[in-house]
Image (cartoon, rainbow, N blue to C red; front, side):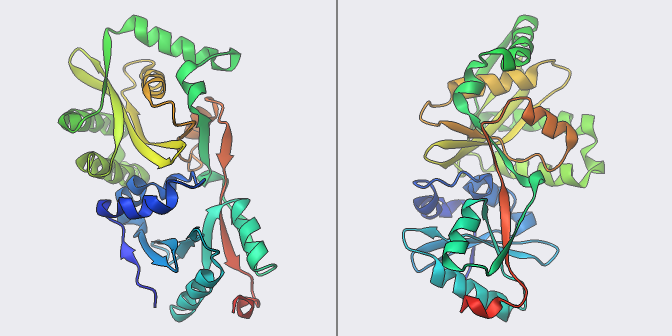
Length: 304
């Protein structure tokens, strides 16, 4: 049996030695996401033959392994994962970004896997410069919202620090009260993940920003890099009573973020109509389609 270790903030140096130099921009591979959502997906990892594999275990008893990451080919590693799945009497699910997932597995195990995607879990990838400048006709509505916020409120923007965590929590409690989080299971889960991130802000290597009006935070955001060219936004909250606050915090943070990051990953929309509309309104550069590969019925033996 492969010994998988639960992901902790202390593991980020090891995990990022595999992920940071590469081209994987998947928000689920951020150490912040792995730790903040561990209560739900039981994220763990193992280094097998110089390959990193992350495992997720979900409440429906589905166990999912990421496509191995590392310098050497992952053929033998996938065989080991298949044996583990067999011993646990579970299907073998391999997770990754399509079409890379399919291309790599077909090259190694042609005709063995079936592939499934889920639009609701596609990550929205934006050009950082687009969100920082809001140029052109497509971004005219966003510029209007930002300009209205700037004219209406005497605000200030500050980088987010641990000294401001309690102010963020106070604002977030108001945000949750307005949306009745306690009556929505998904919002309650999001709350648990977000508060973990704030409570472990420095430990997880997070950075962010906040908007202040009359001495109170009215919007905040935070995230961390996924790899060398992509920064992932893990949280963005604003009080709706301050019109344009969401647009303003988005713009302020994007324009102050290091130019070394070409892309901003703003995660998925989970199939929520309002969230999908909002994310599409910022004109993503690309949707990262996350998929699953499952060993096709009757072809299990071809893995060995």
